[in-house]
Length: 128
Image (cartoon, rainbow, N blue to C red; front, side, top):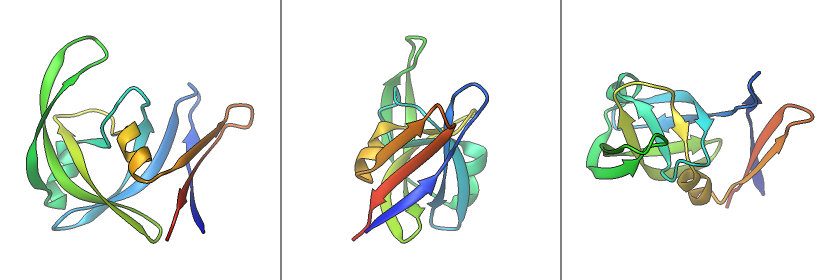
């Protein structure tokens, strides 16, 4: 059985998916930009992360697209897609656009389908 999540493509050809992120004190639906150059699971700004009550798990050093290397804190969270719940570590940033990276797609064992000719985006995730 497979769960399908339908996303969107914006006018610039960027692809977006909305997932639910759950912490210790709450959950939120987050629309994130798919970034295949981002090797982590998910990055969200602190203003979105703080109300969720996420637990600090550590830090990670990442190289940004402009070549700078920065250290980010990581927090435990659960990504929920339909009946699927996946525990992940989230990067919390000072501000900016939420990003979904390749580690989340791999964790979900997802199949990402993008039809540029139709402007459609679908993430298919196997459910047990």
